[in-house]
Picture 1 (cartoon, helix red, strand yellow):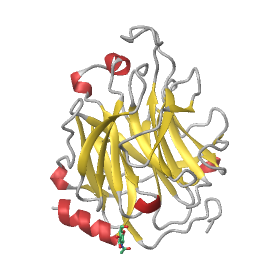
Picture 2: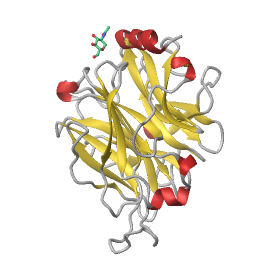
Picture 3: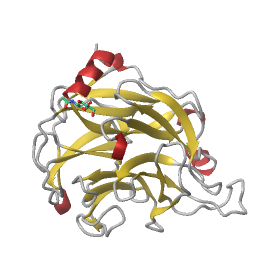
Picture 4: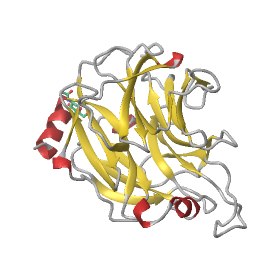
Length: 322
Ligand SMILES: *[C@@H]1O[C@H](CO)[C@@H](O)[C@H](O)[C@H]1NC(C)=O
């Protein structure tokens, strides 16, 4: 069934939200569970301790993204992907010249037990880093589209000491998060640097999407929409210079479980207290308001939020709640 553009009704089977984040000084995966079905009220799971700590690569993971299974894995499989980076062991220049070209992957069949940690190289040797991977099921391909941000050095500059390209969003396809197709460019707004892409489907037919990203040159987050697929024509809300707000990064968007047509986006005030929630019922008109923060934890950094049903909510509470 094709659901009309942005017409999805609130879903009564969804009773809460699971958030996965990293915390400022701690590059590990932390879980937060909503208090009831409140999209703006979260509590730390596992008594505030990490639920995933990498054993490979840099030993640090940033930007954890929960990926919902699609196709034959729908409702049966979830993945967490993340950036291989512990900035405490390097610096921002080195991490973009000779940073990791791999992404961390964990998988789960119940959202509670996470296994098969791996660090999979997805980029070419000319890339300086792979940042903020995320993935989305592409029904038209029957595979997951995985994307991330990289900048590139000339092939002769094997130690990456020269001047790099702008930062682009690159993508690849996978069926199993083990093997990936050769990377290609998804978004190149040269000379602007673009990072932290987050795609939110608005229907179940693979037609209508919102995508949020950070302009790393201007230090702003903006949104685009498409009504003709992941490789359709994307329109920037608010016009060419439209933004949601500045001095933010790491957008994490999710649909409201109860309010029809409401979208939330967390924006990471990286120079301040981390994520703050914003909301809109007219995102394509670029009309956003800051949400209440009275029950929203501070110092959460770039991650993702997944709407969940009662079975999953209970399982998470039982395993990680206090
Ligand atoms: C919730 O989703 C899980 C995973 O798809 C499924 O196994 C379970 O039956 C669902 N529970 C409810 C109450 O819908």
